[in-house]
Structure formats: C-alpha cells, structure tokens
Length: 209
Image (cartoon, rainbow, N blue to C red):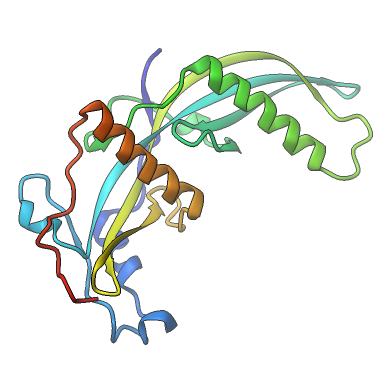
C-alpha cells in the first residue's frame, strides 16, 4: 500500500507563537517563556519549551453506502494509533511521499481500520436526526495509508513535570485530548519497538515554568 502525506500548512514559528501567546492562564504572557522550534541536528534546541513537527499515521477508508435515495461513497479517516474515526473531506489533498520529519507507523492493519471505519460511520449516521432512510454501509471500496502533520509543544508544568500540547499542522487548531493521548501512546509504542524518536533534553528547565 502506497504511503501518502497530508501537506502541512502551519509552520514551526507560527506554531511556537500559538503556544506562547498571552492568555488568561499564563497571566497574559507573564508566566510563559517563548517556545522555539527544535532542530534535528541541534540537541540544545530540545530544551522545553519547544515545538517539533511529528507525523501521525491514519487510514483513509472509502465506504460504499446504500439507501432508498441511492448509492454513495463516503471517505472516512481512522487514526492509526487510537483508532479515532472522522469523516475525511480532504482526500484529494493527499500526495505520495514519505514524511521528512519524525513519523509513527500505524498500530494496526488496514483490515482493522476498515472495521473501525464501518463502526464509526454507522455510529455517525445513527446520531443524525431527521433521516428515516439512513444509509447502510455494504462494502469497503478502498483503503489508503497516509500520514498527517502535527506540532507538539513540550513544556514544564509547575516547573517540574514534562507535558505536551498538540496543534493540527494543517488547520492550526488545537488537536484535543484524544490526539494528545494518541501521541503519548505513539511514543510508548516507538520506544517499545526501538524506533528512534528523539526525546526532550533531560536538562530541560527544572524549577521553571
């Protein structure tokens, strides 16, 4: 199966500004240190707070659905670590290639992805109101493995505990708690398999926020 990528639209400096911007929680900037963008060739740039781009895996699954109103094909996405389901409206933006930064392989195969896509679409359809003749998924048309970019922000919480936040590198929106958990699980899986994903420096600002 050919690997595809969803191109990033948000650059590192923009991501760093997003996480460092003044807000109520950091007393409008008084309690936050500016984040910098990590450089793969310079370990000193991996001292929190910093941001780096990672590529998460996902499956684009095209499902065939039938109803009294006719047949249709629906593109869905299943995140490759957590199995999180979403509708996919940017399948035409996928381009062939291998990510140029750190990337994570999926934690399950395309057969499992198709199963999760079916269940996810069924749950989505059943949650819609006002549809008497809801479509029924009867086949998987196509499955494509792809990688999508995120920016991960590493920082010290309470001056001691290393924590992360995640930004969607395509939309510029916060990725949410589920994606944060998926990233952490991806790190655990990478470490277990021996995959080389750099970790934040142990010299990271102890005792500072």
